[in-house]
Amino acid sequence: MSYSAQERRSGVQLVSALLLMLSLSGCSSMDVIVASSINALNGTTVKISCVFTSCYKMDVTKFAMNWTYQETLNDTQELFMTYYKKRGMVPLRSERFGERVMFAGNLDKNDLSITLSNVQLEDEGIYNCYVRNPPDRIQGHGIIQLNVVTELPPPRDSTIAVAIGASVGGALALLILSMVVVKCLRRHRKQELISEEKMEEEGKLEAEGVAEEGTKQP
Image (cartoon, rainbow, N blue to C red; front, side, top):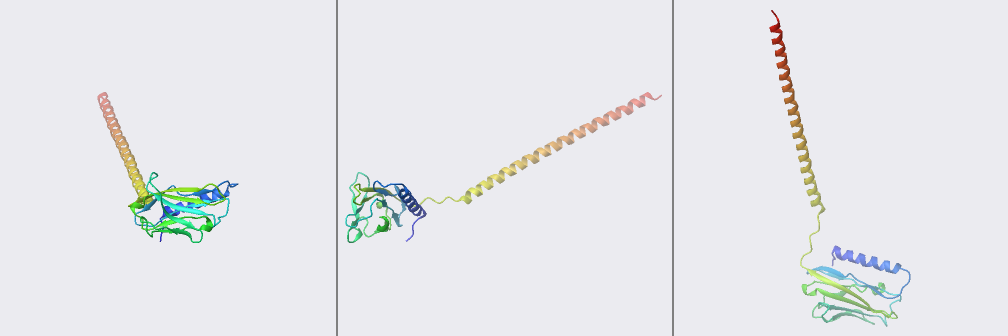
């Protein structure tokens, strides 16, 4: 069973958020930490994470937890996993999920995560993670929007960008070099024309001087 890079990043983010919340001074109530939205590829296995923090250690005789599903916020919630005092986390019979839902968390670490295998397009919707851990008076509630896609966007290939950049840079360099060469050739040609005109002018002056000297002689 393998998870995508996005799922692993979501898990790291959840753990980081949990450690941050635990590092804060004081503890006033329960907090449920979930990813607000998860993308899953059709036909794969996805992990739906839910972790809670509490000022009190979990008491198995009082602890309560439910996972529910609903297509939209306006639809009725369907219970598909719950906690039993003697059996722990137990998947319930569900026409929608069958035996595709498994508990993947760790109660000792307040981790109530689940996995959903062979994800179907019909699995898209809202997943609710409800937690009650007396003597905490507030019931924790995490809401996760699962989006099922038929294909993931292709990863960005930096080598393509580098190749394009190199091609554009090379073309610009050739263009600039060509302009410099053309400019130098034009300047050189202009200098040659000026030199030729100057030589012709000097030749005319020399010829006129020789003619004047010839007319002056008797």
